[in-house]
Image (cartoon, rainbow, N blue to C red; front, side, top):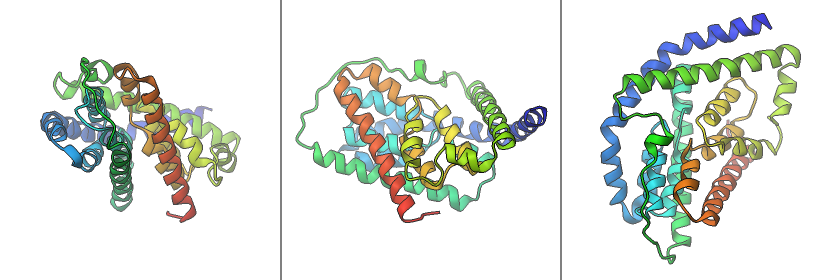
Amino acid sequence: MIDALVDALIDSLKLFPFLFITFLIMEYFEHKMTSKNKKIIEKSGKYGPLLGSVFGIFPQCGFSVMATNLYATRVITVGTLISVYLATSDEMLPILISERVELSFIITVLLIKVVVGMIFGFLIDFIFRKQKSRKESIHHMCEDEHCGCDHGIIKPTLKHTFNILVFIFFMTFILNLGFSYLGEEKISKLFMKNSVFGPFLSSLIGLIPNCSSSILITELYLNHTISFASLISGLLTGSGVALLVLFRSNKNIKENVLILTTIYLIGVFIGLLCQVTSLF
């Protein structure tokens, strides 16, 4: 146990400079681009799913929260909202960068999320094209649900870095213990690595309305505990706290459940597709 604890602490501390620098850069661009992105999305019209999926890959859940509020007031379509949710990378990207994963792999994952978000966003808008939209008035919840990113970039950068390091430390510690007492093979079976049910489980984990879901799924993949198919399934359904904001800001509960179910089924479907085609 002591060895597992020490190894987890060392591995976590090694990531600090990479995470801090990555988040600092991301916070800077998020502050510079958020208002512009919002205006572009608002004026996107029928091209919403295209722009939503592209902007959605920008790390952290701030944009998905903003898109949720825009949908609740019916500024954007449901297809655009789902395209943002599917493309949102949340904390996945900074972890992959800090772990120095090959750039080609990172680009592949991001492209899959963008293309899937785009395709299903347009498809959903086509299916519901005759549905009448209604305007509702809500208060924006990004500040309440996110991290107070309106107050400079250093403070939220440190907060993001610390929160993720703590979570990575506990995840690494638990995995180290598991590998020591159970072995990698049993841990992989627990998360159904080579099972057809793997994407079903990871898609469910991805729905957890917190950045911890994307961290957990990414760490499990990097530790060879889940397959690439399960990684994609979980990352497609993971949109940070956006789903929590959706249920608070959008009064139509049936509609919210339908959106959540749709995202889950898409995540499972694409994961199974990756499994069948033996992608990665």
